[in-house]
Image (cartoon, rainbow, N blue to C red):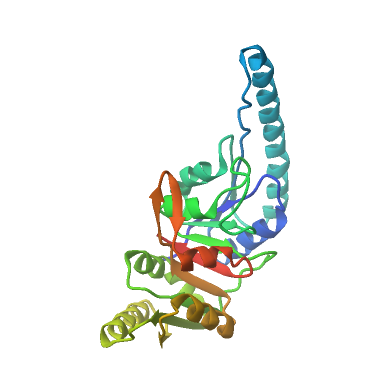
Length: 273
């Protein structure tokens, strides 16, 4: 099992180099093709009957500017990837989140930045990591701020016996296989035998794939606090977790741990749902 095709999201307003260099480093390690993807759109300007033509013209000009910017971003992507990795370019004149979700069908893994965490801001120019994780059907590697070389020597798996966590562990096997240290940690208010058996099954699953992992079961009702204390103390390069959320009035609503992980922009995070 390996990643053969990697999709990297590039925000049209940049910065371009850090995320592309991180994706190149990752793609070379896995001998994968790198697909650069940039999407943006302009909001339709609301106007009355008399101003409709002017509003339409202003909207067209904004979209023309976006298309021109695509050319500049494409040129920078080509410059960075030239001679480094097999690469492909895609630009999409659409809202970034659905554009990236649509493009994800071409890849095993999505790499993106999220410097503002869950609250990305301008939905016309920035892909929303929450929407991508929950809608793409692909694992998402959210790169920490200003990281240009992805390290995965020490990995913490935030384990909870759910479909999302099982999916994340399976999707992360190629990363876990190359790690030097893997710790599967679970926090529970009642750390009973059933939870320990679940951890043992995860360790056995990973061992069958050549991954040597240790487990840590923390008995505490404060799962959020204890998990982040453990992550901080571990000095991990990467946190693997399921992404937990649901749709409410067409907006994605996250649980506390998932939202907090996405907001921890200093961390590399690997998520599946």
